[in-house]
Every structure is written in C-alpha cells, then in structure tokens.
Amino acid sequence: KARGSWWGIENRLVNTSWSGQRWTVGIEYKANWRQNQSNFDRGYGCINADSSISPNPCLDSHQNSRQLTLMAQDEIQLGSANLLTLGLSYNDLGKLGTFWSPRLGMTHDAGQAGLFKLLYGTAFRTPTAYERAYTTSTFAYGNPNLAPEKMRSLEFSWEKRFSQLSRLTATVYHFHIDKMVTTDDNGVAANSAHTNGSGLEIEYEQRWSNGSRLRTGYTVQNAAESSHSFDNSPHQMAKLNLAVPTGITHLMAGLEAQWISSRQANIGSERIPSYTLANLNLSYTPSGKHWEIALGIYNLFDHRHNDPVATDEVLGVRRWQMPQLGRSAMLRTTLHF
Image (cartoon, rainbow, N blue to C red; front, side, top):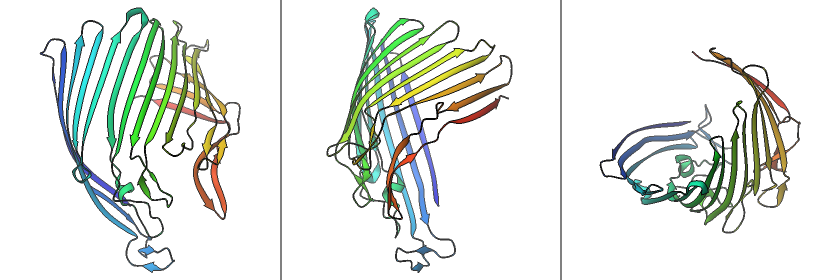
C-alpha cells in the first residue's frame, strides 16, 4: 500500500515597467506531509525470506519532505535581434540540502540566415520515497542515504524557415548528470558515478495548402556512465510522419515510420538488432459534429522484433529481451459534449 498527501503554495510577480526587460520573481513551497508505504501479507503480516511468518508488516514506512524555492528571471531585449535570459533559483530541500540552479539563454535572429539559440541550464531531482525507503526482507531496494541528482546541460540550436509552411531545425546538445540514481551490484538504489550524453537532432517540417503535413527527423546520440554504456540506448533514430487527405471529405490518412538502430542489452553482453516499424492511421472528423472516429493499424507490416528489458532469472532462465506485438488494430470513437 502507498498513501501520499501534500499541500503547497506558489506565487509569481511579473514586471515590465523597465524598458526592454521582463522581470519575473517567484516563491513556491510544497510540503509532502505524508509519504507512507507498507507491505504485508493479508492475514499474516510478513512472510520472511526464510519462509517464516511474522505478525509484523515487512514494511511500514512513514516519510515526509518539503521544498522551498525562490526564483528570479530577467528577459533582456538587446536591440531588435537579440534576447538575453538570465535566471536563478534557490532550493531548500530540508534534510537533503540546498541547491542553486542558474540558467542562461541567448536568442539571435539573423534574418535570412535563421534563428540561433544558446541555452545553458542546471537542474536537480530528489530521490522518491520508494527509492529511499522501500526495503523488505525479500527485496532490499531502498537507500536512505541517497543524495539528489544534479544535472547541467548545454544546447545550441538553429531554425530556418523557408516559408510560412516549412522549417528546418538542428540542435546539438550535451548534458552531465552527477549522482544519478541507479542500482548497485546487489540491486539496492545507489548514486552512480558521472553520466554524460551528447547528441544531434535534425527535424524538417512541411505543410501544404490542401492540409497535407510532413514531419521527419533524425537523431544521433551517445549516453554513458563513466565506466560503461547504457542498455536500451540506441545511437541513431529516424522518424517520419506524413498526413494527407484521402479524397473523401473529412477523412485524413496518416503514415508513421520509425527506425531504431541496434541497442545494447543484458548489461552490455548482448545486442538487440535494429528494426523499422510503420503505423497507419485513418481519422474521420466531420465538421459541425460532436463526434469523430479513428482507426489505427500498428506495426503495419507485422515485423517481429524484441526490446531490451531488465535482466531477470526465473527457473534458471536469464531473461533480457521481450517480444513485442505484431500487427494490431484499434478503433476509437470520441464524443464531445
């Protein structure tokens, strides 16, 4: 069983009285005054790892936490083509410490050359009550000594509009995560070493006057801890979405295709091969009506493929991949009222 209760308050003030600037200051307070978890076998209490029976629950955890955030941000217009954004937040997490989170953004409109953006940010994530406290006699997972995760990211993007109906976007990014919550060799929650990731994303979008739309993108990325790469983290992905009128009034057809490169699995000892999936969607939305209907056919070509899963051993068999669905269909109706 799990039960949580919380309350909070948030307030922001925006000031534009200074020429060329937009100030925002704010305060937020959140109190998680009940974060309770319990685990017991109904009628017994707890069945221990040695199969003995105890009248007490295996887990009866009562946690609470709070967070106070003070933030300030200034958006400064530098001439007609540049916008500078400066931000800073102070976060008090009680027993988990305090964090300063600065942010920086710069936008430059180069006219025909496109729009350029440079973004730098920091963030954090507090461990959940489950990650800190869920431990039973047969499943030791929670770690009360977990520290919050901290992240820094840097992103540079370029956007070029060829017309009102088409645009091209390219983004290069890098992030660094310190103390990311993962599991140790015994399956207990732990703060890992440094994690880094870098990537490039390219996306093109085109619309036509007859209602057709095309959106396609390609991503190349790499994310790894200081000692090893991640399972289920493809290095390359490509997507395509095309929606076109069918010639029947109010009926649109959409084709979605996705390619995923091979992925590491089973703690780096195995690999899942790459695959391509296609989905077909038909939607009928009559104008002036309060209903619509849609038909989706997923995995259109019935491609057999697997996805990596967390390793598990049942009856001496080590499981590290799971077969996914073949072709499937779903009919959906929506009524608006």
